[in-house]
Image 1 (cartoon, rainbow, N blue to C red):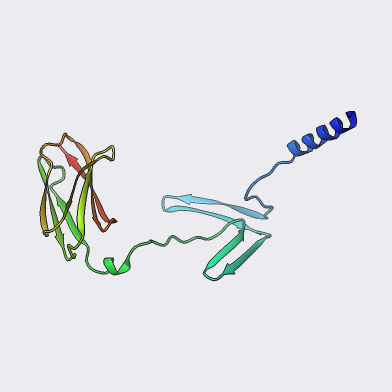
Image 2: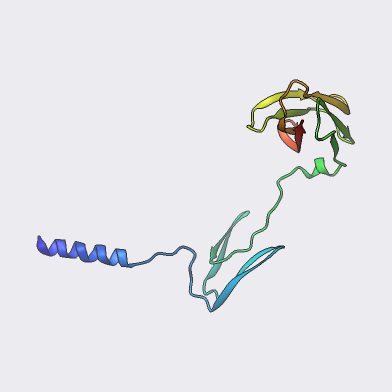
Amino acid sequence: MQKINKIKLVLIFILLAIKIFAQESPVSSGGNIINSEGSVSFTIGQIFYSSNSFSNITVEQGIQHAYSIVPLVNEDFFSSTLNIQVFPIPTIDKIKLNIKDIDLTDLNYSLFNINGQLISKSSITLTESTIDMQNLPSGIYLLKISRSNFEIKNFNIIKK
């Protein structure tokens, strides 16, 4: 029994002595470059890298990976001129919404307060619309313009 306890103690000691680091590898050199434009992290002498592809999915293994950010937007929608204006900002009693060169089908707005609570929501049927804010307290509001639950543009509105 004492021998089993000693073996358990030795195993626990060995496990505690082993350090496990994620994304760490012996490399010959590397570093970080940071400036006002952004940052770059690099390694030289990475000893392991592989890439496996399955139909349209690629899995890369290794220390550092390049990545690209691809916007998930409907390019057909944005190929037209997007011209939405909200004025005056700051406002006292109402804001005017001026929309040009956009189909108004299923277009609507939602007005939220700073806490994210929905204040008003309505369809946009005219190229020039007015949103009444006279009865709302002073503060910062978020106006979201959307089509069929697809967010098109957001505006920060300041009410005096």
